[in-house]
Image 1: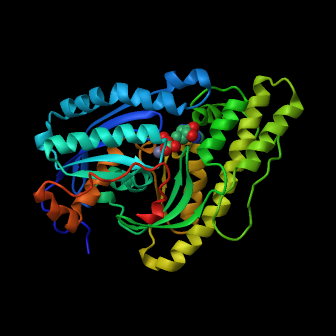
Image 2: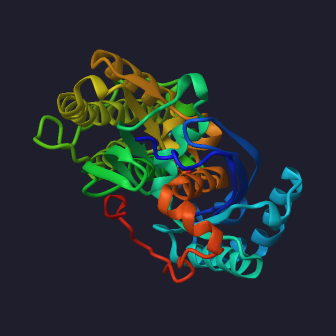
Image 3: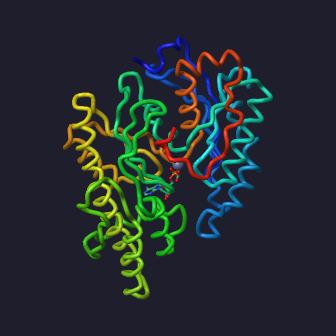
Length: 367
Ligand code: KG4
Ligand code: ZN
């Protein structure tokens, strides 16, 4: 049964994202399975505010969200040429993330919803990443459930079976650092600036990936969990052994690190692909790569090869929708609103969601 069976016309939803260092607001109009349009998508990156500290400072992030969010939301509405009366829902990230920022976005969105009578939808940030591929797919390239998802971001590294909206089954997760965190820490160690991931990738392009032998933690072990902290420590050790680092040393370290990440991700993902295809048979068609680290070309190409060797088509949202943005939150809200129960409640103007708490931790599999 289609999730959107009761819906006959598109919904228009405002999405607000403030869980890390991007303040974002967007408006999406669409109908799951029938295409969607991003009417506006405004992202303010706080990079400059955090750069002097070499990483995201939670207090600075929360204050920057307060400073920007009202104006960004107004801009998103203006660019879409819409007012609150035109909205079917207001969705905001309710976690997981830096709690100060989550509170700012959540309370602002609740205030807007309460004042305008538009239904409010609290969204798990990871669910935003997990469903984005359905926002960016068009009619001809619809990505139906179920699909296997590798979510790689600054805070997470998870393998999930996405069976439907709100139905996520975790096959594996990191037991220590997230993969984006490993990129960011490597960049910091080598003095490459922030954001670390793109900087490491750029340097890796001119480096020799065979120069340093780095570990592949958990490789060959049962299950689908990941581990990256040993890899990060090994990079630090290799850098310390060299002493003063020249540009080529840095490039070779980045290339060796990135190759080890690709290999580790592949080793765990291959197990999840085998589980997914054996459980779902013919129904298992898509492998989705999502989250900020999905912007990495080496990881993309490793995963494309792996997916095709398992008869799966790999789908990756456009880079601008892989990193944090408001459109993915709007879309996840739209998917929820499209479900029969929520859609009916819409006419009452409230969904009882205004009491949804902000959460620093919120595993996706407990939706
Ligand atoms: O999904 P995202 O925007 O925020 C979180 O929810 O965490 O992901 C941000 C992460 C950062 O760690 C950043 O360094 C990483 O994605 N990243 C990359 C690349 N672009 C962004 N990592 C590796 N290669 C890239 N090209
Ligand atoms: Zn994210």
